[in-house]
Image (cartoon, rainbow, N blue to C red; front, side, top):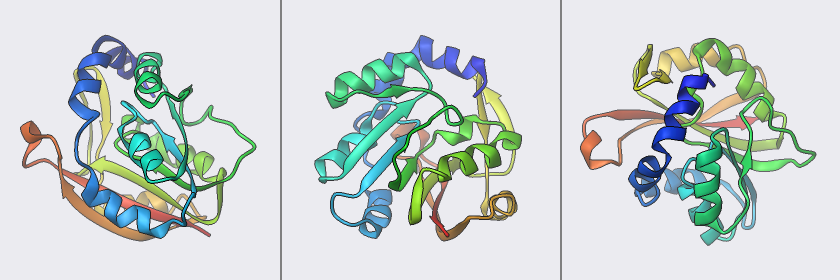
Length: 196
């Protein structure tokens, strides 16, 4: 993740938290969570405010969370009443294997040239046949806004990326509208992959 992106979250952590922690993601949860068994182990990769981790914990899942921003980790730890690890996607390490990885609007801050490596690395922590959710702003370009890097994907460009990642296959691919009212009319590409 570019340092400028981390600078953004350092300077805007509180505002970002307040703008995201209570947003309704039920339309995506309803597609993802039924794939999992009760008490499944979920890794929230790039957890931001901790919103999704909180929902998964409330549903009875075992959840571990990390984020690359120290400031977001502190806010999420306070919100979840549970430690959030501070690391980036490729430095994350554990001996554990997860039933699912959730990476909502987080991997999009990597350059497209970095994504295959990061996704492959994270997938090593998945059990066989486990699931991997990720989401990107809908489109097919890279850009910088307010010092944050964004990689956008559509169905075709993500399929091209996935050709570099041999151990994951698409289970679901669907669009959703941004849940923030001020972002109405902006769309996201949601992807559920399965290992194996």
